[in-house]
Image 1 (cartoon, helix red, strand yellow):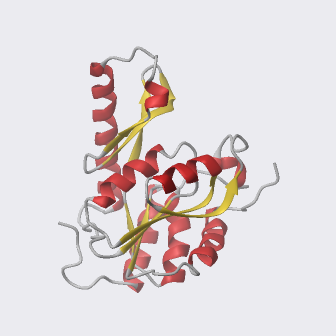
Image 2 (tube, rainbow, N blue to C red; image 1 turned 90 degrees about the vertical axis):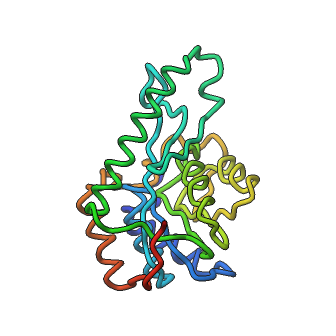
Length: 228
């Protein structure tokens, strides 16, 4: 497959050009799914002149098949299960509970690292929350993020990704959310998000933290904007 993006920053600029034309972007807040979503989201936040924050989501690997996502969990406790993966595998409730708790711990740990232990989360209340990742596959992590952000009662939620399969995008749209995808790939033709990047190397936590700090310096939130 021909590579579409040289790296995540280029993908972010391509996505920003698309989402900048989106109507009704009332008081946008760009929320990145770290770590890969942060470089993409930084470019979107710059284009929208919006603040940037993160929402940590960790994949819940299926027992015995760690790379197979049977769900996803956020640091605040939101969880989404993939019933298609779980069906017929004979996984016990005790196994699911253990894997879920591990995902929670990992999410909380990463969130603490990215926030340097002191930077509070921003609230999406009454804002247009723009959720950004470097791509969609099954959509499990994005669905968990949507569940978490919805609790903050935003004005509107937009899912923004550089690449994703048509069926997954349509599934999220059927849930009532707007999906802005720079490259919708026909069903069955996207085996991994990484295929759409020449450089899909892991983004270090220190790089993510620096990007968040840079954006906050250029676009500080007014007092009282932190999440509660």
